[in-house]
Image (cartoon, rainbow, N blue to C red; front, side):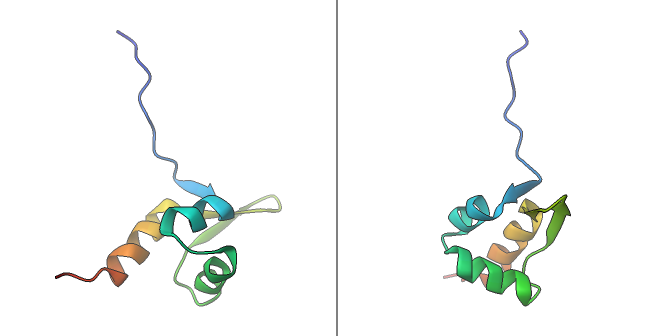
Length: 64
């Protein structure tokens, strides 16, 4: 069988990154500006690495 496997992207668009962590675009750009999120530029397009999104969530995670 040659079923297609789902592949997690290594970077996402700004709108997608904001949606993934439940914040608006303005807050996402604030997180980028203060170094909380890693970005890359592909031409004029800004992409956020999913690894940095995961790290952000882990840093802010509250254990009960």
